[in-house]
Length: 310
Ligand SMILES: C[S@@+](CC[C@H](N)C(=O)[O-])C[C@H]1O[C@@H](n2cnc3c(N)ncnc32)[C@H](O)[C@@H]1O
Image (cartoon, rainbow, N blue to C red; front, side, top):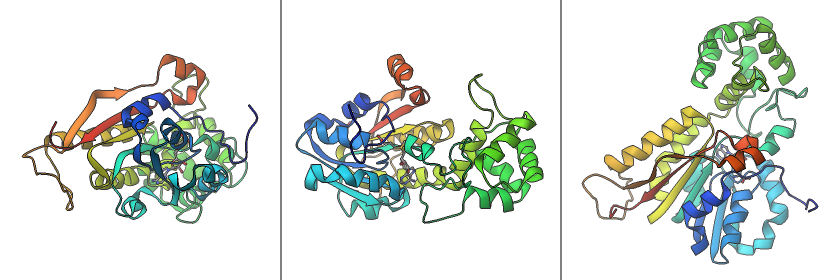
């Protein structure tokens, strides 16, 4: 099949699992918090003619690409430029049958020369929203060794985080991702989990998460989610990093057991829970999907159904 205008290179992960989890074949109002290449949004819209999607992304380029085909869905698709921290404004008072977040970055962002790939020789940027915040070059070239260490440690770099921070401070300034990746490689401090994985992979992931405050954003999404989902509706979150997966899992467990009610909760207040965790443990992509799309290998899907009558 030839590529159409606005088509993305990103391959959506766990597509069928998401459609099933959200009950999208039955139609309804959905919020896709991570539009990206639009793969999940399209699948939700195609699953039923009675589906509507509000799709948000903090990356204007993703929405620009999507806008080239969005009109084919008429008023069934609404694209909104917003980060998770503005989810309530993006929802505009609407409540949804299903809310999806497919965290991390898209393949399109990786190949656009925006500093996410360690092969890039262009600017060391790494911002998903290019209109706001500090670039990775600003951060690595001007922050203290301790600030860099903390960012690397929070992003899961492990026991070498301190030594890598020292190396980066010694070799800076960096103007391109390739320079930074080469410095990590030469130091032999990067984590090499598999032989074909570049030793700077985890360092890049940690820097990207820091520059985009990804963990902080996920926590804000988890704050807003109970007010955005209808009684009986579902929240589905796909993570690619154990730090994020732990944050999602523990928040869902808390909702199931402790009952933290949002101010505008319309249901009857149960003593304890505001819903149930669907599937104990995270769902993983099938072996078939991982061999077809290796980028899916670390995906973990967790689903929560809101409503106190479970
Ligand atoms: C893994 S991709 C989503 C791919 C999409 N599900 C698809 O099928 O094509 C993640 C997307 O979420 C966006 N994103 C990440 N963090 C975000 C945040 N805090 N707020 C809004 N969008 C975010 C990124 O810009 C990226 O486009």
